[in-house]
Structures are given as structure tokens and as C-alpha cells.
Image 1 (cartoon, protein in one colour):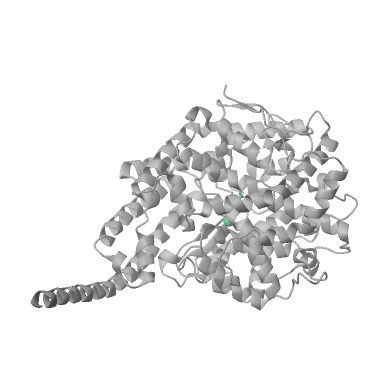
Image 2 (cartoon, protein in one colour):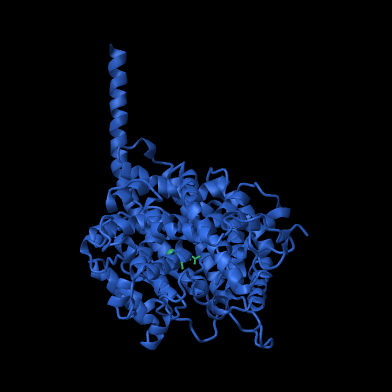
Length: 615
Ligand code: X8Z
Ligand code: ZN
């Protein structure tokens, strides 16, 4: 009996000690979150200075400060281990500790982390500094990706010219950094293992907090693939008519330089030559924007106005004072790829974008302002929670508004579209245009990470690294390079996110869930009713809807404080990622395309590509 009482007292004492420790841990976390915000702010300032002016001095400063932050994170990790947090009562405290114990690449040794940062900067700055000589005037060698090369790839219909720019760009942005990329993969793997992951793929996937995530995406992708194949077959059929049999085959993969985008990730730039009803209107307000004297600042004001119309947070003074929304003309090199930045101080949020006045850029502006809205909605939370429900959530917010902006209804409302008659044919044109942005993007986005996962997992021999990339691009998207590539080339880093070490699955997830958000927001706004032909999903405008805004607020203000199904639930009551909404949106197009492709005996699917050989 005595032994029992002593044991009981000892247990009680331990439990009491644990409760006391948990109270102390709470205070510890409060201080730590503040300290991390402060230090991350300093590091972000240095990153911003570098990204907006790529010189050696800025690079050195950025890497030094990043190394200091990594060192601090290591100290935090060892401090955290003094707490028995796994046994605490509060889920919130446990979640914070778990997140604060994730080191990412900062887990590398000091020397290797420095190497990692230099390797990344080398790839990123190489990408940003690519210059190409003009195809027509070979002495003019100052063409940059943004804006000149992107414009040519989008507008030129001369396939030889397109091929020239394609090859020049991939050689300079891809092949030039092969050795850096090899080193990057090595260090990435080391870092993943130091974090107790089997590879960098698992480290990236961990952010989705769901062991079946990859499988879920495979399943959703398989559901959408038939629609993709219909679009692919139709576009190839139309391109064949346009360029001739010599340039486009009947059954093979589509030569990607003809698709209006350097990476063939979105094909809307060629809508004018492939849209279903050429004699019917195709919504393109670029000219009208130019005519009305639109400016980048006006485009950002419009995005701000859209968010505030829904009762959401308006852009801050710091945003307007500190953002870079036009390409500087002072000759400095910078990273033009659009990005949104959180500085982890109250209201200090910025965008860096070399904005051009076009319809697609108007959508990108909303995309970026969506990131900013998220930053502002969760800025009250502890530092560890100031991020998206998962990385895809962050990419989806602004896109939901873009879906709304792209409708004829909204474009009419803002005076960019007039005399538009929305009959069945115009509607198919419009759905097709959106599909060239959204459906076409799915296999592209998937392969960006399927490829890198395979490398990180050590599943591909180095001697096959380039052809493996093209194999996946062919299998998933049915496209191929315009010229034969080999292992002497190395093309993956010619995509910004590969050179810059940005995980890409987020964009795939974002497309799927943005349609879930959009559909619910449209219902809340009274703009969509599946049983009312007057209120179709593809002409829903959520502008001015406080109800839709409230759903956003409920989700965004949670940041990452709960697993993502909770965040999704806060928006619309669902807890599962699903392809149902995207399928519903494109259903009229699917029906039309299937009939049209049969009518024209269009081949569906593609044969294997022979455009990559070992040597
Ligand atoms: O990188 C971006 C944004 C910045 S987060 C401009 N996007 C992806 C890309 O350009 O490849 C948006 C869509 C996909
Ligand atoms: Zn984004």
C-alpha cells in the first residue's frame, strides 16, 4: 500500500511538473515567435535587396544574414529539445513546437549551407540575366525574358523564329547551370536526411500534412486527363491546319515552341489561332487596356478594389511605398519573375513584378495581391503560423478573383468589354480560353515536381537526367522540344522555379482547390445555381460579395494554425481536395470537344517522342 501511495504521489508530481512546464513553454513560444519574426524580417530585407538588384555585394550580404538565421534556428532546435512538448495537453503548443523543429536546408553544416546558398544564387541569377540576340537583327543582343522574349514566344507565328528563341533560351537558362544543379540535388538530399526524411521529395510533401497526398493528386489528375487529351487533340489538329503537316504531325506530341509559352505551361497566347469559333468573339481586353491608358499602378488598384469590395483588407501604405511594380530602367539586373513578399512586421508587405499592361498580367496582378491578402489576414498570428493552410492555398487565393475578373460579366462591369454577345459559341470560346490556362497547366505542374522528386529520391541515373525530364513532359503533356535534345543539354533549370528551388506542386494544388473555392464563393454570392441556366459557374462574378469575403476571411485568418482540411472547412464546409468543381466548370466544353473531335476524326493521345537521345 505504501509503495502504491509513493508511486501515485510521484506520478502526480510529475504530471504537475509537466503542467507547470507547459505554462512556461507557452511563454517561451511567445518570445521565440517574436524573435523569429524580427530575425526573419532582417533576412527578408537582405533577400529583397538582392532580388531587386543582383550584384555581388547584395548576394554576399544576403547569404551572410541567411547563414546567421540558420545558426539561430539550430540553437532554437536544441532549446526546444529541453521541453517535453510531445506530452503536452495543448494541441496548439504541440503544433507550434513541431513546426519550430523543422529546419529545412538550414540543417546543413555551416560550410555546406553556405555552399547551398551560393549554388542557388548562381542558378537564380543566371536565369535572371539571360540575354539573347535578336533573330532578325543578330547584332542586337539585349533581349531579356521579360518582356521581349516572352512577347515574341507569345506573338510570333514564325516557327523557325520560335525555334531559334526556344533553343537559345534553354541553352542559356538550362544547360549553363547543369553542374550547379547537380550540386543542388546533392545538398538538398543531405539536408532532407538531416531532417529525418528519406529525400527532399518527402520534405516538400510534408508541408501537405497528409501521407496520401501524392496518391490523391494522381487520382484527381486521372479524372481530368480525358479532358486534357481532348484539348490536346483539338489544339494539335488546329495547329496542323495552321502550320501544315511538316511542322505538326497527326499523332505525335505537339512541338512545344508553337504553344505561345516558353515552357508550354499555358497556351492562351495562341487562342487566336486555335479557338473553336474564330468568327465569334474571343475575350481579350489587352488592346482595350492600352487604349484606355491602363498603367501597372491602376491594375494593382483594381485588385485592391476587388478585395475591399468583398469587405477584405486593403493594401497598406508600406505596400504602395515599397513595392516594385514596373521593371526598373536604370540598367540593374533583377529577378523579374513576379513575387509577393511578407516582411513579418505589421503591414510591411510588397510585390515585385515587372508588370506589363496585358490581360494575362491583370490576372497575375490579382494572383500576387492574393498572396498579400493572405499575409495581411494572418499577421496577428504567431510567426510559425504565418503561412498558408498548405502551399497550394497561398497560390489559390488571387486566382479565385482572377476567375471572376476574366468573366465577360466582370470585364463589362469595369468597362473593358462592350458589345459582347454571349451566345453558346462565344461561351465555348471563353471556356476554351480558360482551359488553355487552367487545364493545360495541370500536367505541366505535375511534371515539374514528379521530375524533381525522382531526382531527389535517387531514381534517375545522372546520365539520363535530361531525357527523363522530356520523357515526363511527353507522357503527361504530350509535348516535345522543337529540336533534338541530348544529355549534353540540360533543360529543367530553364524554368524559373527549378533554378530558384521553388516547390511547384503548390500550383497544381492551387488550380484544383481554386475551383472548389470559386464554386462555393459563387454560391454564397448568389452568382451560381446549378439549376438555373441564367447563373452559370463560368460567368460568376463575386465582386462586391461580403458573404464570399467572409468565407475568405474565415480561412485566411487561420494561416497554418490548423491542418489544411480545417482551413478548407472554414471556407465552405468541405474537408477534401476534389476535382469535382473543376470538372463541373468545364463540363459544357468537354461535351462540345468530344463531339467536335469525333466529327473531325481528330486523333486523341500521342505517340512517344524521339526528341531526346542520350548523346
Ligand atoms: O510563379 C508564379 C507566380 C508567382 S507565385 C507568378 N506562377 C507560376 C509560374 O509562373 O510558373 C503563377 C502560376 C504558375
Ligand atoms: Zn504565387
